[in-house]
Amino acid sequence: MSSSTLSIFLFSLLVLCSFSNAKRSSPKPKGFIFPIKKNETVNQYYTSIQIGANSTKLNVVIDVSGNFLWFSSDDYFSSASSYIPIPCDSKECGIADGSGCILCEFLPPVPKCITNMCADYALNPYSGTQGYNGLSTDVLHVYSTRGQRYNLRRFPFQYSDTVLRQGLASSTQGVISLGRTRISLQAQLASAFKIREKFALCVPSSGRIGNLIIGNVAYNEPVEAISKSFISTPLIRNPMSNNGDHVVGNLSITYFIDVKSIRVNNKTLSFNNSLLSIDESTGNGGTCLRTVRSYTSLHRSIYKALVNEFVNAAASQGTKRVASVAPFGACFDAKTIASGKNIGPRVPTIDLVMNGKNVVWRIYGSNSMVRVSQNVMCLAFVEELPNIAGPTTSIVVGGYQMENYLLEFDLTSSKLRFSPSLLLSGTSCSQFGAS
Image (cartoon, rainbow, N blue to C red; front, top):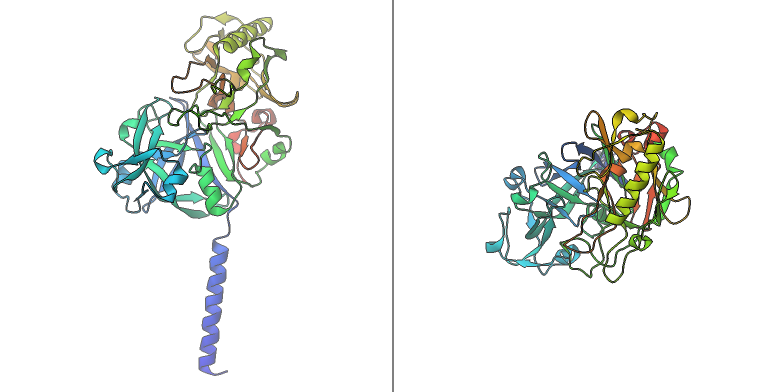
């Protein structure tokens, strides 16, 4: 073989090997993982993301009902070389469902500005404050469940005014959305990487770390074995938005489930059951899931029925009621409550009963009782206040009741699958991950 022929052969082999290695180094991801922590001071669940050319790290509160990522950060602002404003008449603005256009002179400070920038309202779900600002894109750096880093280019978000962060945990810079929009985190990942639009949420209790997994992946043990007995119920749509940042008449981006009744120690509560259905003309009623609510809130009449029955059932177990501690309506002498093996205080169970007698979300003491002092524990449910920005939901399942339950939101099939309390199996969200 001549030297020139040999050189061509070796060069071709090198190119082929390089191409093969490149393909192996970037396999198509099946899912992505985001660690979840809890800020105990304000009962907020947050994750970390990296965004921009300099991979600025941000802590952002998780909102399963939010519409898009918003944040403010001096670190990001000073190095936002890959920040791209979204034009008002662009396809990206249409996908984002922007509510209007904004001129530079009316914008709060942003890294870059263009004339007629696509704009929308960002909502702080804790303060109720809204901020109107331009929408933009940048590269979001994400990690697969195999630990490989990928770049999600042109990820849409809003750089917001710093004042919008009031009420968020001090260690966080904004809010990331998992709501039913085309620019939520799971929707963008599903579109970019051609994975199933599905996410598994396992929020931790205090001092632990949980995980958010986006995509269709197998779980690690023992959670994978537990997943075989998951309970399934449809995710339903409220025909009217219950977010203050959307025009009433739009479909809600919030996740609703069809709760039919509530039980305490297997006894069905008595109240006006029409409250559990969504009124299609007003959007009032129904049951939704909100990680940004610390505790589950209930319509006044439902809450009254729950408190009365729970107090009676607890008294029959020898539990002594004491003066209430706001915002809770029923509190008890902690010394009169025994401790369970895995599931916290031994108190009456609370069931959310859905479509079918076996489709039940059972809540044990670990998720129904909260300690407010050394000697006092309270029922961790509160009364729902009217929503002045839109329809009022009768039951809003809060983050405390989700802790150590694995919730699968499958947007492709419009189903929610959920586990019994992981504590029953001697595990928790801190042990949840992908195999």
